[in-house]
Length: 56
Image (spheres, rainbow, N blue to C red):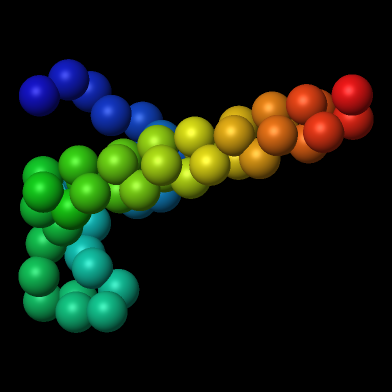
């Protein structure tokens, strides 16, 4: 797996889950967080595009 920036996913690989400090963060959680952030970015871009179009 490629290097991941802490800022990209919001936490460092191997840090503890704050909701359950006994469990280390897993690769699956990182992928889920990336997917969630990607969807959020797409939604914001769509909203911005929709606002721009509605101005015309």
